[in-house]
Length: 307
Ligand code: ADP
Image (cartoon, rainbow, N blue to C red):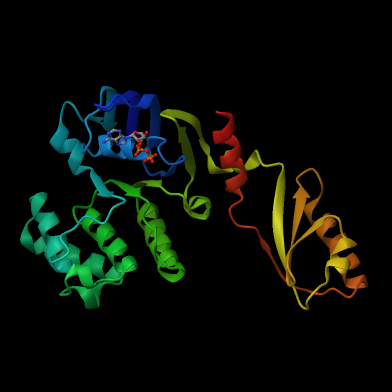
């Protein structure tokens, strides 16, 4: 079954902007799906229409087989959403924000409290439950948005830039929380500008540009289009430009780090091994090596520039 089934979706705003020009998109139940695209591509318009904050011009949207035009209340009960903008009452406490949301969904008070305890625990907000929300840090506000979106146990979670402005440690804790949630069966659709986030979390990806869906594929499929992989080598000691000049395959990032691009047609281990031997002959020792993050970035930029 599809968690989301969008057909021929169009949106023209009253000022004449054609934000969506006939989008078809299906997201399977249980998927972790990344919706990507440059600013102004139409991502928020799609999320807004799914969550019924924005009225579509034409086309259909079904959530778990329920058409939003036919049974809006049921379709809405399947969805939890965290918008990009922090939009709760800054003077309410953390627990009131979550409990009021439960009230909107008609949840019994006892159940709502149990759910509150569970979510504040998992999202590491327990000690902030009596705090008014404006006193929370940016990362805590993001986690509170997620707690609020999940209080009624939605089957589909829509996250619009969930880790924007969040520090690395909290970002990682949000990622593990979302991974666990997805492994327990919640379908998640994520929009983000952070391609590392996409690579870590998403199984499938849609790329939208100027109101058209230009790519709809698995993360693995997309990455396989890359013909090379980049690695960063951390060096034990400082290297000079002239030392690096002996290795045309290396690009210096700074005095302690170099980057190497390996074509997929070459055998990765063989290329790296022979490089390590040559480096060691020149007295250059490697402390560690890692896959360069944001492998998707170049591919993404190529796709949107050619669409
Ligand atoms: P994204 O989320 O990918 O950045 P949006 O869905 O916000 O893109 O915007 C898609 C297009 O629709 C843009 O050209 C944007 O300027 C326009 N747009 C968004 N909201 C409105 C609105 N309320 N009125 C008019 N145009 C809008």
